[in-house]
Length: 308
Image (cartoon, rainbow, N blue to C red):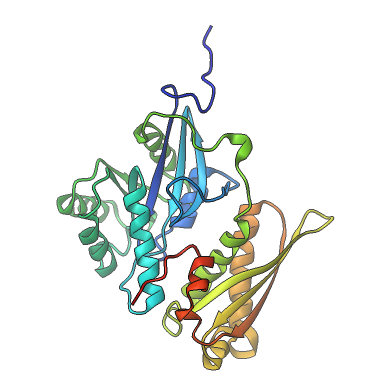
């Protein structure tokens, strides 16, 4: 008779941190959801991930895979930009494995090129994940995979569609085999949802960036003010979006409130998918001058404050 090993017993289990590295909008959130399943499990920050946000935990066979999300990597211009990029790379250096996510349609564009250059400084095993493969012809996909592998040594290359789930099972199985042997870091009964407020704020900030990155490049922060579970099991969330100037407040609101309504709708949908219950999201926009130079704001976002 086979005896299932107890989670957390050394030698029989595997456990490791996998950093997801990629430019903004390559589909990291979608991939996390696809890897974890229908409901993302958020855990409190501990062990060596104090400088990055744990987005989810995957249990596959006898392995616990801790997915460490990193801010989208881009050319840093402002202090906040530099803090976010620094956080992304510290997440990569602290992890056991690095998953490099590229948008197959965008190919080796400027952002992907910058990431591959910087990845040369990361010693951990790397896995290449080409996402959105349903959007380009197969021959272009193979050429892209070859070009990326010529640039850098990848242990594995996966071609997936995070949205449809195509190829995700194979990726999950390989991650489970690739993390180091050892006890689970997070006993299943201790997985807590305390940082859901933080994650909800990150999701809203991502939607702002997605809609307004031309007019408002990362010049905003989001804080979750209230999180109330109602009798009907739904959640009421109030968030404040802080910008540095009145002109930026008007950009976020949009004509007749259209922009903030659209941001709220997208954010509410994603938060609801994660928490698994209906969400009522209320967004407010306030001006807080020079917040980008305030170390406390950075700490709230889990970022280190750059000295210069």
